[in-house]
Amino acid sequence: MPDKSDTRGGLLAGVRILDLSAYIAGPSACALLADMGAEIIKVEPPGGDNLRHYPSTLAAEGRAFLGVNRSKRGIAIDLKQVQGLEILKRLAGRADVLVHNFRPSVPARLGIDYATLNALNPDLIYCTLTGFGETGPLAERPGYDQVLQGFTGICTFQGLTENKPEIAHGSVVDFYAGALLSNAVCAALFHRQRTGEGQAMSISLLGAAMAMQATRLVWADSEPRDVGRDMRSGGVTGIHPCADNSWLYLSASTPHFWEALCRHIGVPALALNPDYDTVRKRSARVGEIVPVIRAALQKHTALKWEEIIGTDAPCCAIRTVEDMFDNPQTLHENLIARLDHPTVGPYRAFAGAFQFSTTANPAPFAAPTLGQHGDEILRECGYRADEIAQLRRDGIV
Image 1 (tube, rainbow, N blue to C red):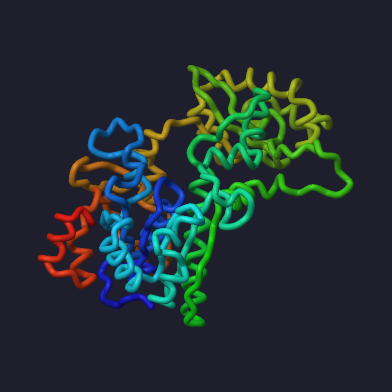
Image 2 (image 1 turned 60 degrees about the vertical axis):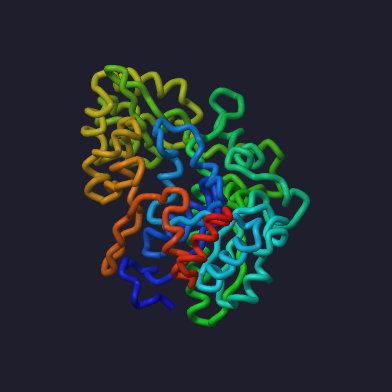
């Protein structure tokens, strides 16, 4: 149950989560849980999460690390040392949830497998994030976002236009796996509240990549292997050039949207033509339709077309990520916050995506420097000042 002394607020106030994960998927899941008020303690090895060291124009810290580690306290522990393992066990004994993304054989070797920690804390919800799953012939393979994109067919579909495989940038599998994990943690907490049972759970990048393609992963017994699985509705739906080298995304899959698009861009005859009155017909005749649409779009910039069309048919001018920091809609939705970091200084960043009618979200705070909150976390676990000093001298923390 939530600790009523928790002062940060949020739906998950009082829930304590140990984040031993690295890179994007696990940390992003824990950041989502922090957005709802959970207390997150990020546990890193002495060298830090490798994401800290990824290329970044920020000299003091990795941009990606800041982005997926908001609202966490941090401690660095050498789990390969006996004293480091003891610290982790003390933390696990006080935690509600533990998240890691080690390969399946690693936790037992470190002495932090589910059986060991469950014996210390039967209430613990133990979350494993793997590349390919905890068992099976590929279980021990290292799994990264783009590995699973290639493995599951995402790259094939991404590259249909150029007829060569392409990566979908943005770590889409990682972030979706993180969303699945945060959802599963909430479900496990709900189950524990009803039954008193902690448990182990597992999410894989393989499962996330498959779930992302549920619309494609349907294969009737009567169909051949090379059945069409592309969900893009022909060449009408997509990105089109407009005046002044601007670009507009359009979607016109429904009859209403198709009619509105044709009317607004000044080609109503397209909407009246029975050869084009369904998505399938338009997909089959893109060579006839798209040149007419693109010629009409040259009359205005993408931003102007967005203003003209946007209320009646799905569209948007193509923007850069930098535009999101000052966009009126993102600001209105409180999606951007200004944070203050000990070495980076003030910066703006994503603030969280949840909104609840009666429970306010806690204010986000900056990602930790390596081991930033180590002393206070150790004190909370019962370590004396002289013990903490010795742990530091020994390189344990």
